[in-house]
Image (cartoon, rainbow, N blue to C red; front, top):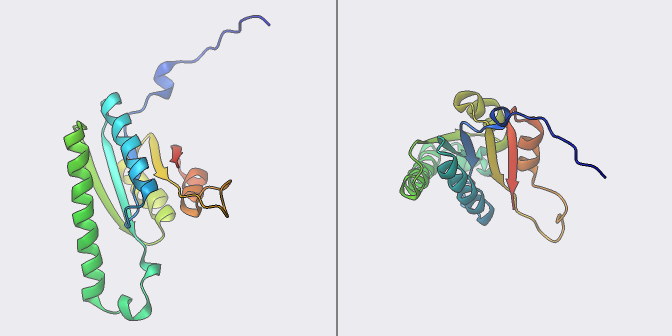
Length: 155
């Protein structure tokens, strides 16, 4: 079989910014996605956005009606986001911005955060279990199907 030439322009696939989604519970898949995105952003010398979303559906009716409970969760998320931003900068990413949303993660990231940050690449994690070892998670699936940018799902 002979050689075929592939005609593509490297500029067409360049990454100018990366957004990484991390879980509010700091799961192992979030940490892997974060590490992947930070390494990529540093190597490519591009801005990094970090997003986490407070899943309000996880609150029971009593908690959702208590302003102190909701504000406490928001404060924990802000502190966690500050840590992520700090770690990314310590690793060598120069331009880092944190985003916090509320609602269903995939939908909030695709509809609110991506239009605001305008990344070329979204990195997210996905946990696998024995039961769903061939499927990606619900939120990762939603983002990969609906994001207007390329998506990398890290397991």
